[in-house]
Length: 173
Image (tube, rainbow, N blue to C red):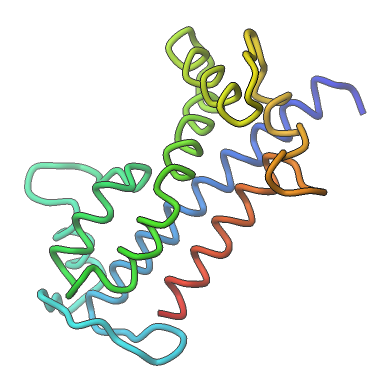
């Protein structure tokens, strides 16, 4: 397979992974707001009680706004704390991977549009991950490099596994 195809598939794969994470957060938040339990059967103490998922979504979005930025993990944590006692089941999980979520947003931004404003944060992330300067690193090179903290995994794989584990913790409550 040509390199350009591998680059596009890898980049699109990460972008789709991140979009799926955002979709999961929205679905979980709205379903718990209307009173559905987690997979384990526990239900958070709700401070709001919208009767439908659509109204729950409207509460999250707010008045005069068209969307809620689920890629901003701090805002998701704030919403969870506003709507559920102690932000359960979101707060503890999201706070435990706060830096990883910020890193993934940097990668997501670079996958959506690579410009000078996304290249510098990508290089900074790569330098932090690999402990050496990474001037000019491409998104593909970053995602396919071995993860120094997880033997046998790539950076892409490490982030994918963190999102899967976090999703499972939130879904199971």
